[in-house]
Length: 316
Ligand code: NDP
Ligand code: NDP
Image (cartoon, rainbow, N blue to C red; front, top):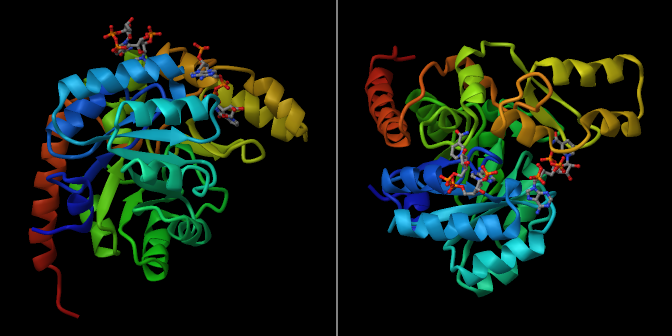
């Protein structure tokens, strides 16, 4: 089967594991790539030399293509880009910044570039900047997110209508039936984050993984829009942030409550009270920690089953 994203990246299945700070190091990225999808190292939680170490370990652990996600709101981005070029990483996903900044530079080194967006406006900007594909991420997604709260169900067909380059859907996709739905709406592939947080190879702390398993519908919320919108589990830290809103606090008050390294404390060190626990709404459907290869296999099986189920739908 020919598929624009599989052809672009040289992968077997149109399943991409999201770059997630503190959760997607080389072990997860290599496992997903070895299973026929595209694994992504999340560089936002890495100092430059840690990123180099993860890229080198990933290259040893898989012969297949893999990518690095570069969230542009994090420090040391120029050093990250230089290391990615030196280490000959084949594919880069940029996010949370202007796609014009690095696209031409990366492409001049033969690197394929994808940019993550949450609106039609920024999808068009990314296409104009010359990216090879776009990830359109809906409101359901965990972690940093768009301000407009456009859901995946609405975003994908709108972006599809506006773009001619390949489109990857993200946000709320943790099953093969959701993958099929996104592709019916016009996506060429899907990007899956939360489901891979609860994988054996994810570098998330075991306590955070357990929290993902117990999360139910309504347990996450998008907050901190004045700084950088982020979807979190409603833990003590989340309620401390909400208290600032109730007291009509300023942006400075929000920054004071946020402090430093909350994401590391929550997701990597397992502080479930004071840390930031970034996960998507689909966490309500996740109840097992599996090896990443089994997650890829389950997505494929569920996708094929959903295709069969569609045939049983009534004729209108
Ligand atoms: P890895 O190859 O996993 O990690 C190498 C380095 O990268 C370490 O300095 C580690 O930090 C850091 N690191 C790992 N994942 C990330 C990430 N997603 N974002 C940013 N930095 C990351 O090496 P090892 O297998 O030797 O493990 C090193 C350490 O990583 C161990 O001490 C282990 O406790 C921890 N780890 C924890 C896991 C967990 O589930 N909690 C899973 C895998 C590893 P650091 O040294 O600060 O841990
Ligand atoms: P912080 O800026 O609070 O802290 C930096 C964290 O990243 C630390 O845990 C640090 O590890 C680690 N780190 C990895 N690589 C680097 C590097 N190259 N330089 C410095 N630190 C590094 O991190 P956040 O993830 O919480 O936020 C990242 C950015 O997003 C910041 O600019 C922040 O202002 C912005 N932001 C974040 C929000 C959020 O919800 N997280 C909300 C609004 C804005 P170590 O502890 O080992 O030094």
